[in-house]
Length: 370
Image 1 (cartoon, rainbow, N blue to C red):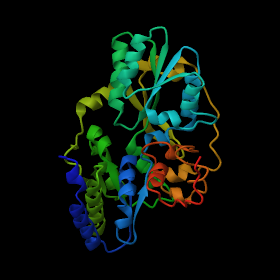
Image 2 (image 1 turned 30 degrees about the vertical axis):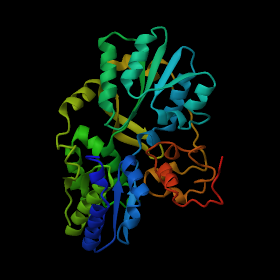
Image 3 (image 1 turned 90 degrees about the vertical axis):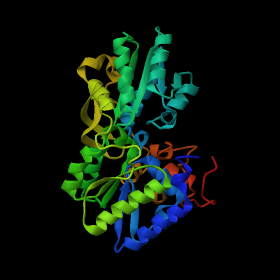
Image 4 (image 1 turned 180 degrees about the vertical axis):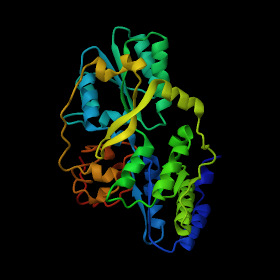
């Protein structure tokens, strides 16, 4: 299959690994930012094939996982109201709130629907003018253009029964937050190729310079990641700290200006709380005043909601790379993909889900079959 098999060639993978082993002279710690990259690394065992002392830390690269519990509970409160059709991507339906999740609400009669893009939700709003249709706008910069376009179309077409719960988060501020942490161990980043495909990499250049960390924009296939690791380690070994682009087939330095224009027509940058991480200044999008009528939190007056994380869940330490899923006492027992305690076990991009799918650290005598 063209443009897929080529990036999974085992002989090329062996050659890249051999070169990584050849140039590595000391321990290094790298972090991949994207959850999709995490799944490839763990599934293919790329981290286990690296030289001794070279570690991959799995970062907060899953937007579903970092959506704060308060935001989930607000979504649940809105979805439970009569006359509301609540729409979302499939992953969000099983992310646990304080007491329940969207899938359980649906089972109890709430009109919760899976959609594949926000324009599907907008179409539902057109077809149901007597209902309030709400879309859960979750994601990194990658999904922001489509969400912005749907909101702009709703305004242009006078569709006033459509609104969004905005939970967009931005990658560069999260990276600087990790680097500023007194417990930081990251020496280099593999940046998320899909985010950079939209935004480019100019935002990363000041980070690389200020913190003297190499940043390599990387794709998602095994060879992409191995080449990204090689490029990062080569910079570390040579004492360089630049932004390099491994994902040249999809990413340009300037990104896609038209998509960025659409984003900033509808959204502006503001502070955002990340689940398990906490507040990060200027790390998310919020609606501009001209589009405030499409803010579901305001429309439904959900206000402040008090939340409570499950005491056994260490999602915050997982998301910041301080611990691995196998360090969690609930992993594979109290917490499974069928019965998740926290978002990293739910999402298709969650680190705990990646480890569980690869049977990392699972003792068949302890794993729950529930």
